[in-house]
Length: 239
Image (cartoon, rainbow, N blue to C red; front, side, top):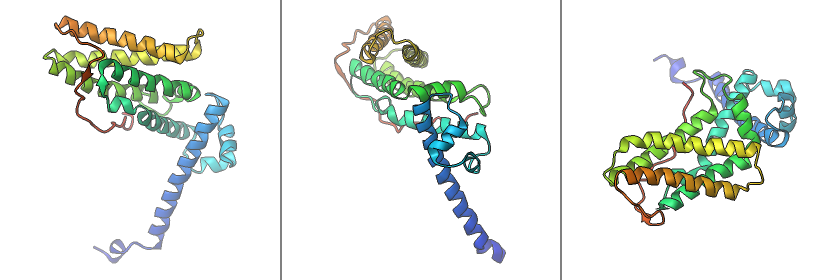
């Protein structure tokens, strides 16, 4: 080992400090972008984001490679936020109906409270990602995989075929996401509570049908033994 490799010089310290400062600035600017999207809509310009951040546009781009890098950072931050907001999905407890209702309420609630961000993600998050993946698809996949574990746990406990857990999970997540997206665009005087109640009832019927095929008649209001607790998964980087 050479002296230079054993003892980093002043330049190495400066580089580390700059990297840390750049990362902090990036996060501050992404948070400013989220505020700009919420206020000005999903088609907000980079100039408007810079205004909300309180810097000139060239200063903003000192911390991002280009517009694509900024949009990718916004999408990644959004996946963190929605994963944290959907805690009921990661820690289900109570009766079957309670688990469904709480999870659906959390999902529809986040989409309703962040409608402009959701629209932004659906319009822009494929930029800079490969294989057609986007932040919305990443989040839905994470939720569905977690539900697969939950459904698989109960199907196994009831001695039923757990292989259907994956199909049910992705179908349920798609149902909630697509119905809520349409409701955001055209509510038709339907309140979010009414939407949540509808989705909860429909999801229970899907699950109830799968159980009855296997000869199981479950009271949806009967408390269930909770599945093993696991930490919220991460969508991870795009493939």
